[in-house]
Amino acid sequence: MLTALAGRLVVSCQAYPGEPLRTPDSMTRMALSAVAGGAAGIRAQGIEDIAMIDDCVDVPLIGLWKIGTEGVFITPTLEAALACARAGADIVAVDGTRRPRPDGLSLADVVAGVHEQTDALVMADVGSLEDARHAEDAGADVISTTLAGYTPERERTRGPDLELLTQIVRATALPVFAEGRIHTPQQAADAMAAGATAVVVGTAITHPATITSWFAAAVEHDAN
Image 1 (tube, helix red, strand yellow):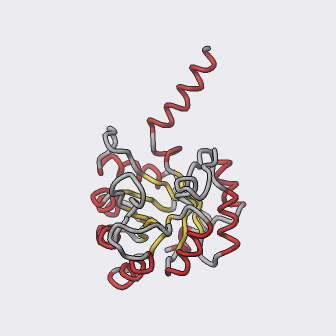
Image 2: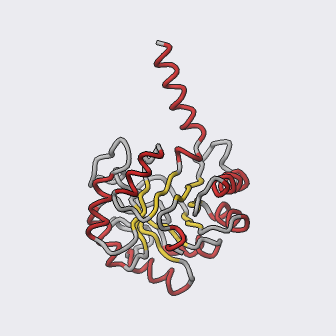
């Protein structure tokens, strides 16, 4: 599974609550378009989205379930992780930080539960080097820099946190996926040059509202 993604692009197909594209059908079409464009894998949020996308694409699927918006909310419990795997996720992305989890379990408990009860791998979404080391010790199969800049341990960089990426690559033996604020092909290439196993891009490919806002701001700035 991870070999198929090494050196390749994963596209995150997600829409925020209340947006027009916040439907499983819309995200499935987005995933199909991404695969047609060369994506080697898809990252999807929500049980219905995961299930529908799994039925329609033949590439590895990273699944997660966002519950809430504060603290630990990316697949925050073992129950949520198992639901993602059973819906069709080949890799389940979970909050890989050292913060307390809502179900009271440790990250190691969640990883062990997924491994024991499903065939899925576990991706730990981390925000710091300490998180990454903790995730490796907990038995995670792969690490992603998804939460870099979204926890108090590191300032949010304008683009991808390449410094953190490099630190994690050097300090752990696990595959490391670069994710977070990768908005241009050059930034994606820079992440690979920094040692990433694969690169995950979401907003810059699959979030029309944000992409439109970039262009609108540029036009309005020039007009003024």
